[in-house]
Length: 277
Image 1 (cartoon, rainbow, N blue to C red):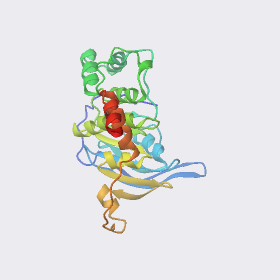
Image 2 (cartoon, rainbow, N blue to C red; image 1 turned 90 degrees about the vertical axis):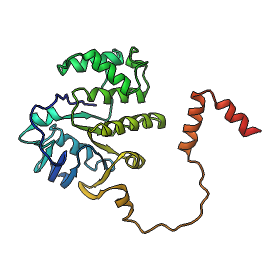
Image 3 (cartoon, one colour; image 1 turned 45 degrees about the vertical axis):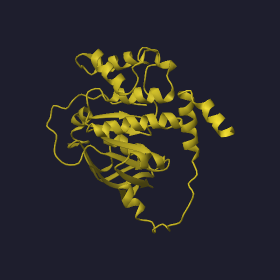
Image 4 (tube, rainbow, N blue to C red; image 1 turned 45 degrees about the horizontal axis):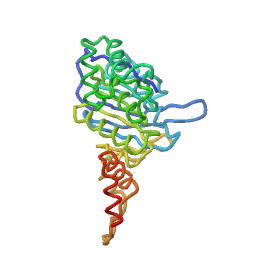
């Protein structure tokens, strides 16, 4: 996982979409990964980029975060051109990759303080304490990260990326490999980012994740955006559903969360007794 350091931009933001991409192409020798991608991401929104493995999602994120150069086309992030204004772009963003980049030897608080100091922020301790509170990690803040669960590490990773208040955050497969409860914890954190005005572009293979989080969804397939819209607009592409009476059965996720939640509150035994009476 790679986190791009961010410092609050000193240049005035340009009005318009937080991310604007037009005609973006990228090839690796004979392999065409991106074949003319166009998209706009409104400010303060969550934009989900869906696609199977090899569709070009990570390549897109690397280009937008200035880690990779496009062959042709243009891309602007926070009003800055990724090719000619790379420094301004880097000052406007944070990138969180597929694996949490946290130091397991340090505590959660020490990780946050370290990044705050690297970014030359004043009062790094206060910044760390505030982020621990925002991401429900205060009690775990003094523990070594080696003892954290996957969901806790991911939340800490995202918290670290917020130091400096970057207006745009890229999350590349933010819940890959996490259990259902940890995924919901990360979803909650991502929603709070957008509510605070941060623009979030996330790549994912999980369709339910895009349904839960995204204001707009684009599907990248074989290097091209084949559909782009809100969830309602995407659903409207299919024929109207037939209205039938169906008794809704709980999903496996419903059962899992109910059982885990009951166990956390000491109510699992009561559930078991009620089911056997």
